[in-house]
Length: 338
Length: 86
Image 1 (cartoon, helix red, strand yellow):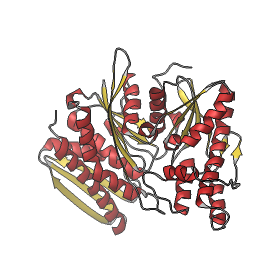
Image 2 (cartoon, chains in turn cyan, red; image 1 turned 90 degrees about the horizontal axis):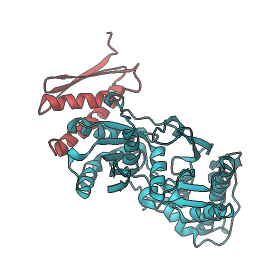
Image 3 (cartoon, rainbow over the protein chains, first blue to last red; image 1 turned 180 degrees about the horizontal axis):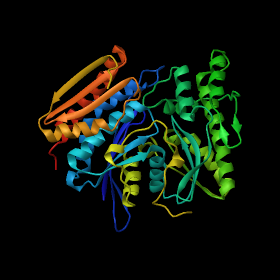
Image 4 (spheres, each protein chain N blue to C red; image 1 turned 90 degrees about the vertical axis):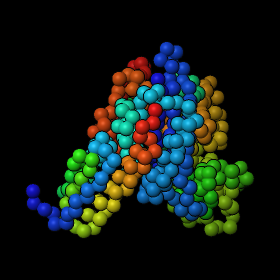
């Protein structure tokens, strides 16, 4: 079976085409094309401009995905799109194209929860069976574990997402957004030497990042801290917070596996710190590279096809988008209860 | 139905009634967010897409019409590029 996935919940526009073998269950990635809306240093991406970007680039990106995959339209079984969570205008712009194609080509359509897309893609690529999932991106920060057909949220951010904290920090320091602010922070951090203490806020299973930003605003002009030192200290502080709540979730459910997904998940320092903790617990860390960590269409196609194979279809008149769509709202029919 | 005071009717021709119908179904999925201040009715008349707006202010009318036109442009571009592909 073949699915095409449409993703555009934030500044990445992604189209992916995936094939699941119905006999063996083997997954084959046929195309994974992405185009990113990169804004000048010191600025972030706004919903309106991001929607315009997606509308400008979606047709060539779909064409390229079809060409790369070499599939015929008649071989596509289902069209999958991101239903939410994400920015409203970009989501709708992409969903409009998915709907039009579903009607033009006479295919069923499946609305996919973006977070579920990340989790299922991470599990598929790494082979992690039943891990504690740390989902860290520009819009989401959650510690998740699976039970009884749902991905349950054990802990999450109380204010802004960790990736949002990194993005806004990069704006304060005027770092480049190309290829991504987080990547540039990671490179600067490698040259940092001095650790500057920043607010460390873990409340039970939850974390908070907004205090760090206001703290950095006040200390950035002090001569004693270079941008490199700030990048280094920021990474060490926020990642330690994430490792702490992940470790607690592992202890709660007795799991020895950790899967890191979401855009911040391709940060090697986060992967390294997580590995140090997990080694002490005799476990294993699973992570993917930027092709699958950062938002992409293939994960939407993959999660949508998993649902479609259990008989799930979104009726066209209900193929809406929603800015708020929690991970635990989705009934996971394609996994066993435990 | 009593008018909200500011209305506009758009009639947009499509190459066929099939394509006009696809545009109508695609657009009708998303509801207007301020449904008490913006009434929007999307229908077809053979190969024409007919959209009636009735809004509480000129500003709302402009915003609503502009945003719908953006979506219609996206739909027609998609039809141009991918209709009839096999």
